[in-house]
Length: 235
Image (cartoon, rainbow, N blue to C red; front, side, top):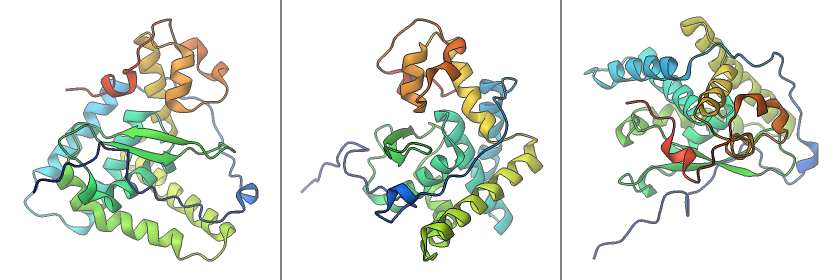
């Protein structure tokens, strides 16, 4: 008997680093800096995609290769969705723990907890077309380790510190290897969609910005219900 798999995003388990019910005690982590408007989305996407392809074609991966593989997937996911780095990391973890329940014949959608939102709203992330099941299988162990790093902490304060440590670890790697601040990916995507004519109200829904004033000047007036799915992948 053939069992039809559910549409992606409908029944997937959603891992969340925040496992306590005391939601109001969440540690606030301030981030410095402003928008980086100089990063070109298409150029950056092609660069990361090219480096990913090199790893995909390697017959054998050393430990440092797997680390690079895992980090590249995080940053491709972040760039493709204009999300925050921890949202991308959480997205990769969710992919790993749902690996066998995903319908890989459909466009893969992952739900993660939106950061810096008191309402703890979930947002959707779209997996880049250049990433497949084999990629997730290759790096699964790396992301299970990251998940366990957080889960092994006993208090919410400790979890928050470990989460920040992980974010800094990946951010430092990106800066060292590409000379890029990870938050620039978020605004490269916003600028990219703005140049495509996506209205600020729609952009705010996609990126989960509560204040559209931050993105309004990058948008134009064109509405599309399938924007998140259909814009962003560069062939």
